Image (cartoon, rainbow, N blue to C red; front, side):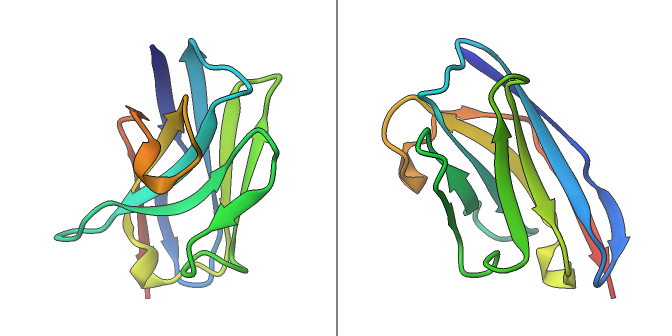
Length: 120
């Protein structure tokens, strides 16, 4: 089992920045693919960014150029640096891990989520 705990959410004005963190524990290893998802009110949860053990990240179109995913293997921590935030980035952000393939549909471990609110 893998446990994931997110932090770093909050309220920010449009154009601002936030950095989310996700600390993993349990059976986490460098082989796990990790990702950030988000769920806006009334919408489905969607992938934002993911990073596998090759360290080559993949981003949703909405995140490209503004968000950066990174991973500190020594600290078992996943980060999401978000800049140029927009009101449409408002959502609950979830950290996720996959012991299998690094595809959006493959994530089986989830954190509890952290709220990000961007005001105009």
